Image 1 (cartoon, helix red, strand yellow):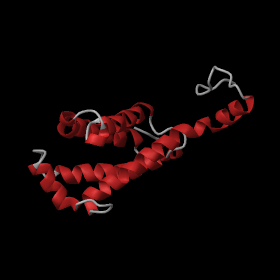
Image 2 (cartoon, rainbow, N blue to C red; image 1 turned 180 degrees about the vertical axis):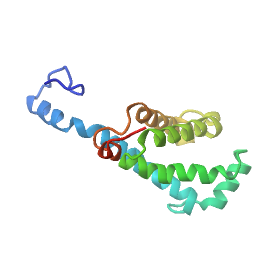
Image 3 (tube, one colour; image 1 turned 60 degrees about the vertical axis):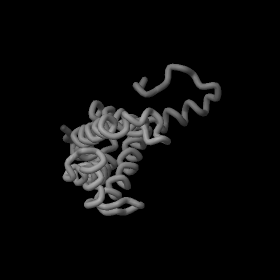
Image 4 (spheres, rainbow, N blue to C red; image 1 turned 120 degrees about the vertical axis):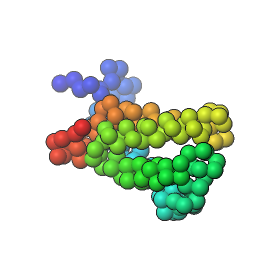
Length: 156
């Protein structure tokens, strides 16, 4: 039986092929879980002031004064990152949550980071663009077989 994730090339060390084939089904959920969990602290910064963040009021003021966005979007952004990150990590409502993350990151790229340049180390759009692309892949593919969506047998 040939699986879609198997590489057509033979590995130089045959044992690596066996290991890779055995672990291949875990690759996608690892990325989904990591993506979700890496979003959570960013949301916690905005919502609760955790991890060196400023909390909802100060983040809302930053959105309004520095970005020209409504202060209420701080709550939306924080909720998508925090709660959406948790849902993405477990793979529940994967496609709609990933679509929200994609939209948030796209707005972040255009409204905040694009004028600064490419490199994230300078505050550029590299990092949010990467996460937008990862989120878009989950909009397209869904949560996969190791997700809450698969466990309940339903997904949007």
